Image 1 (cartoon, helix red, strand yellow):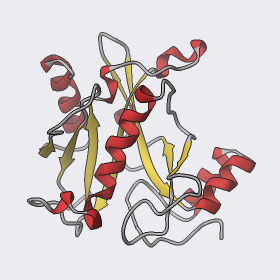
Image 2 (image 1 turned 90 degrees about the horizontal axis):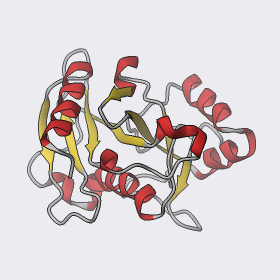
Image 3 (image 1 turned 90 degrees about the vertical axis):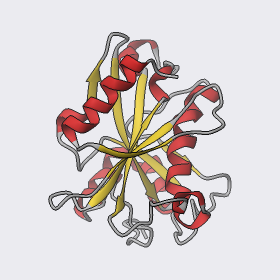
Image 4 (image 1 turned 60 degrees about the vertical axis):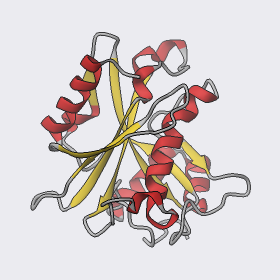
Length: 208
């Protein structure tokens, strides 16, 4: 687990750039990588929940030698203000799959000795299946956050820079577009269609 000091730095960073943590979803049966999820409640100016992981940055990812500044990371995603988060709502399959994927993706680089960075795409199996109930999106895109202020993207710590990435669910055709044309091309299409890390399970496919 992250030390109390490291966790305190991360929580302060979230509060400084997004808002105070309303609740923390603690991992009850953690693996080698313990990942909790911090929930920041909606406000008038920011009408959505913001979810941020803590624990992914406990270990360095296996990044290429020339990219050492990217070895530590945490993930985030936003949910509509109407999304049920109270009590055990996030424990059921209908509403809990975004948290499942935040945790899954936070652990994956350490379990498979690889790394994630902006532009990486991850399908849910082969063939790719829907990420959760109520959506046809079946892949995830890792990208730089769009909604928080730019200062949120990096946190300087004694061990190095912690990079905060957004997890954006995408359709299979969108992932194929990114693989064929580069992630920047897909991100441009997402930006044109105002697709951010704020989840819309039934949003329009920008690469139909």
